[in-house]
Image 1 (spheres, one colour):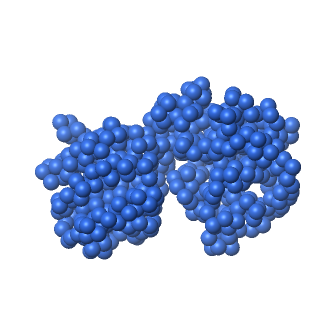
Image 2 (cartoon, rainbow, N blue to C red):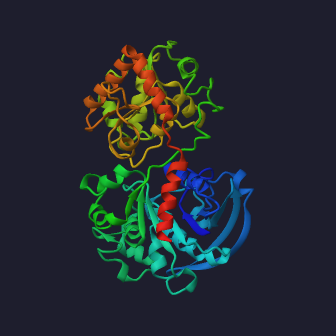
Image 3 (cartoon, rainbow, N blue to C red):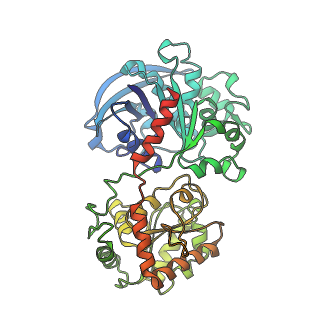
Length: 479
C-alpha cells in the first residue's frame, strides 16, 4: 500500500474558488484504494459551511514555531466518500470570509499552512510515501521538507510531486519579509532556489524542490516552457522538463450526466438527444425571457469574466455575436467592465441575450444542457473544465487552440467528417467571430453533420478514471 497525501488550499465540496478544488476533491476518489491510501489536508477556513464543520471531529492540537512566532495548530478530521480529510485550524490565519485575501496576508497564511501540514503528520500517525502539492499556496512544502524536517527520521525518504494549476499565480513577495515569515536561512534565497527577479517566489520553491512536476494538460506543459506562457519561469521549466508531465483533468461523470442530471428539465443521452435536448433549450428560453424559438442558434458561456478567458475578444465583436439569428447566454462574475458589457447587451437585445452576473450551479447545468454551442476563446487555459462538461452534454465547444482546450476539443473537418467542436488558432477577435459564424453555418445548413458531431462529442471519455491511471503511473515511478 502506497500512502499519498494531497496538500492544497481548497477542495470540493468544502471550499472552492476554481478548478484546483475540483481536482483535489475528485482525483483521490478515482485512485485504486487497494493500492493507494490517499488523504487530503486543507485549511479549516471560517468560510467552510457549518454543515461540514458539524461533521468534523477533533484529533489533536499543538504549538508550532514559524520563525520567531509560536502558533497554534488544531487538527480536525472527517471521512467523505471513502477519503479521509484533515483540516488545520488557526483562527488568526483562516478566519476570513474567503480562502484568499490580500497577498501580503496570504504569504504568511500559506507559509504557516505548508509547515503545519508537515508538522501534523507524526501527530496523526500518517507517513506518506508521496506528498502531492497543489499550486503556489503549497510551494513551501517541498522546501521545508528538504530543510527543517530533513533531520527527522520520520520524514526521510518522503517524495514530492507538485501540480501547477495556473502558472500566473505564484505567491510573490519581497525577500526580507518572506525570510522573516518562513524562518528559512539565506541559503534558500538565491536565483537557483526561491529568489526570482529580486523577490521571493513560493511557486518557484515548489518547482525547484519537488521530485516531479505535473500540470493539467499536455499542451500547457509545453506552452509554459515558452516566454509567452512561462510567466518568467520558462527557463526553470525548461531546465526541469525531464520531470514535467501534463495530465488533462477529468470531470465527475456522475455529477455531469445528461441522462440523470436532476438540474435539467429533460434528461437525454447519445441516442435520444435529437428529440429531447431541444426541450431544455425551450425551457431555458422561457426561464430567461428569451425569444421562444427552438431552431435559434444558442451559444453559452459559463466563465469568470476576465481577460484570461478571452472576454476582450468578445467585447470587440459583441454586436456581431448578438446577431438576430443567435442567442447568447452568459453566467459568471468578474471584472466590472465585462459584467456591465453583458448587462448592457441584455438591455439592448432582451430577446436574444441573457446576462446572469452571478454563479449558480443549477443554472450552469441548464446552460450546458440547453445550448447548441459553448464559447471559450481563452488567452491561455491550463486545462479548462467547461469544455469537458459541454462535450458531455452534446453542446459543441468553440475554443481557441491553447492548453487543455487544444488537447480536448478536436476541430471539425468537413471533408473527413471528424471533430467534436470548432477551434481557432490566433488570439484575434475576427478569427473567433469567423469560427462562431462557421459553427452557425454548419448548425443551420448541415444539421446531419452537426448531429454526428454531437454523437462524437458525447462519446468522448474525459472522466477521472482515465486521468487517475496516469497519476497512478507517476506515483509508482516515484515510489
